[in-house]
Image (cartoon, rainbow, N blue to C red; front, side, top):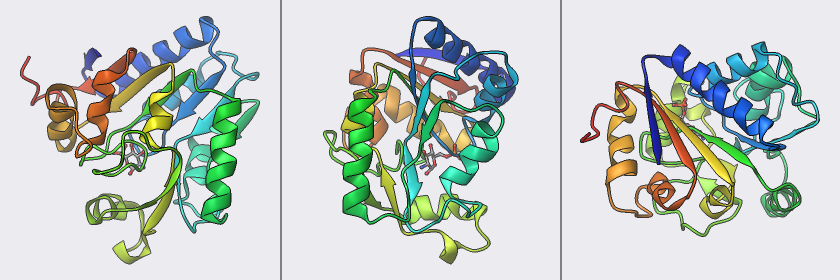
Length: 234
Ligand SMILES: N[C@@H]1[C@@H](O)[C@H](O)[C@@H](COP(=O)(O)O)O[C@@H]1O
């Protein structure tokens, strides 16, 4: 793993942008994208730039089950707002949270099989989840329907009027799906991610900490702020 520790989220955005640019220059055409607050500074830098990715495809990691794309907290809505409405890809795929799970899982895996991800951007859950793959998810999992843990529901409640409004299920690329990406960037900021970062980088590779699998991926870059990196031993 390459580890890049930056001062703040603005510097992280610039560093994330540089990696995206390098990928484009090296011929990458399929970009895996994440939601959550973490990658927004990178998306801001990319969409404000003059980079041309109008012939590229984006594929998002996950979506809440049961939220229509018009719901402000749906990941499709968030991606439209923070990225696609500012600067579009040729095609942008996000799981459809309103579709029946079995059909949606098949549809989404087919999209990924037809468009293998060159560069995947990830955030990190406080419990070490990537996408919506909660602790205990099999490392060889493919796109699946997920039951969200209490801790993830609590962590995401800040975006909803009340905790009961947070969906209980989501559709997410599996860990096996994510690991198929040729290159991966994971960003994590803040003290509340420090423990998950330490375990991801220095702990055992275990399904109890989904992001620890990244130790086995040949091409991973981490962009961390100082708080998120604060529990690393070196
Ligand atoms: N499903 C998303 C993840 O894809 C995201 O990485 C994580 C961290 O979110 P944030 O970046 O807002 O801390 O939370 C959510 O649960």
